[in-house]
Length: 474
Image 1 (cartoon, one colour):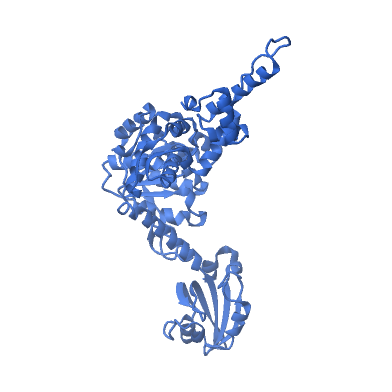
Image 2 (cartoon, rainbow, N blue to C red):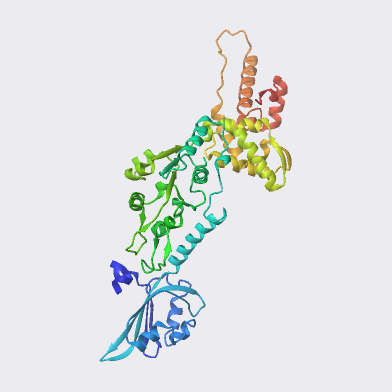
């Protein structure tokens, strides 16, 4: 029983030991793990010596106390997930093993060995609740996005939509890959909603968001007694039975679990932790990752055999920097969306902002563009978004990139040039100012930062050289 309770590493996993006499009075108390009931000090534990067990743990009655029952029944009692409050009112969940102390046929008392599973239980419940909350937002294990929600005029992305229509009703696994923010879950939900599984559950889980210790039982489920603190709980496969399971960032899944996932895909059955009975499941898997799958295989983030199993149908999403023609569509969509949400009346963005958007590489893709527009709309009630309304980080990135993009075409200066030095320097200065304005798309403030002069001084030089910044905005 002790081996089952502590595993192969024995006493290392004991959190606390308490010894009572045959009346239930505490004779000895040891906190072996400093994290066990960490709100209580060593003195707190010493203070309970001499007190009755029911005084220290008032939530127990004599009938429900495992210690009292152990002494009465003269036998060992093991209790999983025993919930109670201690003498300070702190809620705890423990696995307790109580052993009678018997000498010459007489019960002298009992020793209780405790393993604190409060945090395991909290983590289990928290992760389970997070999954439920995530899906509850869209009606409870349902997909809210459809093909009509995909915004694009890019040929490759339009081809992806046609591919979705062709493969949606099949049960083959799908691997969607693309940079962060390109809309992988949008495509996963669209596949589900276009398929004959659309009325069945759509369950989504980001693999990178799960602690490794909780991964297996969140995915496959558990039976009571399967591990410390385990309950009879279905895993994601069972929750998605008949429908679709979307596993985002699949390359974050531990390699050993990828082998178990492969077995589920091959056999169509799932084995809960601690169970001996396979359960049949009918689930379509859509997996996603933000790097090239072959690169993930090369880096040993993804098993090669699992890659082949998932990559029956593959969909590659194009980053926003390679489909700049979609930017005006997204601008309109997100402005309309946040106008309604914030009760604003914006009509668009300035030409300068539009040009900045088209020159920027968008490392965060559509998600970053959405954030930039949402942030900007917070500062404007009506009219258009100007550069001054853009997020601070965005302007800083643009300004940081700008100097490296200036390519000065200096005039050839040779000895004997009939021009005076003053004229040569004036022409050179004029050329540098024009380059700075072209780089900043006619934005005087940004051009002044590039040139490291004040805005007032730049205005003076523009007037001096007859440069019209408005002509350099496009």
